[in-house]
Image 1 (cartoon, rainbow, N blue to C red):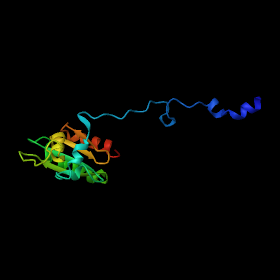
Image 2: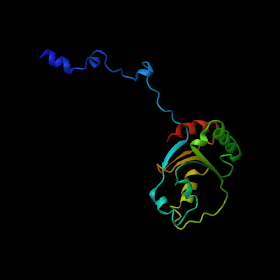
Image 3: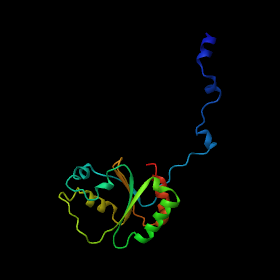
Image 4: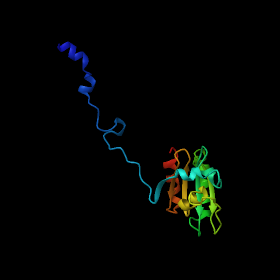
Length: 164
């Protein structure tokens, strides 16, 4: 009976129990992913997608197969000149162009023409991304909106969401 039981026991597990943290951390606690200040994640409502057929303006950002960085400036916030320079540098020198496409909008007092204005892609994006840097993930139907207006936070934002 003892031989039968000993053949059914995994002695490696008995003698060397699994550590509480992964071995590569050498007993340290795994770091939590850091949160970025003034960054929120927003789901794009299905009504916005339902209205695309009659309101195609800006729909390319919420459909398709690539993430977009959309910077919508209003009243000088965020500063488009500063953000264009910072984003161009990050995309070219740090290799983020593999993950993102970019578009800048200087939103003045222009008219938005939507048949169902409360669910129109153009209006929805402007309401949720005005004076912000937004990363739009069409596959997840979500937007990450950074309202910090801090160009120094861009690299951390792009890095955090590049595999998102």
